Image 1 (cartoon, helix red, strand yellow):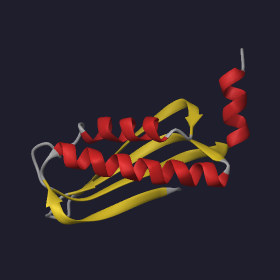
Image 2: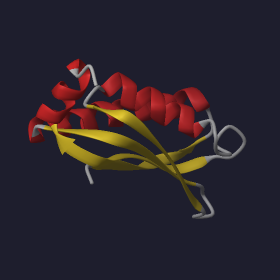
Image 3: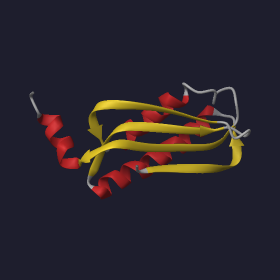
Image 4: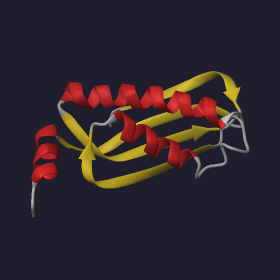
Length: 113
């Protein structure tokens, strides 16, 4: 499952700073998908708090993607479904799964069925 986790040098408390980290990770994950000639249907977020409590959230789409913007916006939306706005965060991670060949992604985009 392609993904990227980042243990933060300092615990983050500002949601905007977390968003910046997620955007950067989404670009890395999307780049890995493109290089691997694969696309993903599921985006997952991992959040770890300073007490080492870890939560995950995920969303699955009907159409696979390699788009960094879509992966990032999904991760940020999932972040808002955690306690990250009220608690400091020690680690953030973005990963993708439900992988398909990139050619399948193209067929899905133009398929009339």
